[in-house]
Image (cartoon, rainbow, N blue to C red; front, side):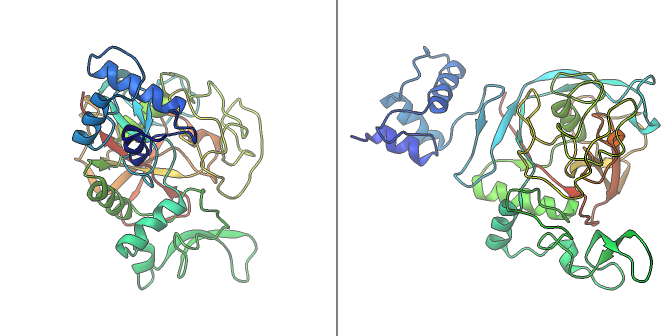
Length: 346
């Protein structure tokens, strides 16, 4: 017999098995809640727990590594722990660029990040709900559509160009619903996180640049979170041009499903490759004067925003944890997608 407590857990999208027993992840989530509220760890659904859930309307995500959703159709989020790290790259790092320095220490408070990039299916739900038209769809004149890799007319080879009709719906390559959405400008990503915030009552946003690098590294201090090298069995990129000292591999010429490769140590998929990701920050050539508390750096060239992670088209060096570039906020490209973040209470 299904109890009121089990019905409430099911309403909050926690796993309830057909026999009425709690799923393993639900039991662990209850234990995390009990630890956070200084209760004895029982991992059981009690009347006291039911009252708390009805009062909060959601699970208090407090344990690093916990995966949660604020609504049944919301992206899965993973809790990123509080910590310190050294941001940027040392002068000794192979293929380092001056924009990756100077090295400096950053403290990052606990927050949550989507464990994968926003997918085509998730972005479609947003568009269906709001009627949003992306920058690529609204562009006129010479700057029309999304920048994609197109065959040149009467010339050999391909070239990157903006083309009318190219958008997240048709980014110049075949995509399934679980591929990362492409041709999304920084402005479009901001509209998505505003919608998520309204939908859930939570504070969703883009990750800051320092949060992004901290989460990508996941405790590592090497060129990649996979170590000194990254292979095309680890990530989707132009494997024919690997990072210096690494093995050559496959060039797929297309995005892959957002969970095609193993996650990093903190449960995040595709922090290297597949699609560049927007961050909240304005562009600055160097880290001189950058905030050391994990917040967004909203000074500098704010017509541009920082991009991280590399893409399906990138050479291996651009997937390094410290590698960074930028683009105009209204610029859509079939190399660019995004993931989301949200604030958590201490």
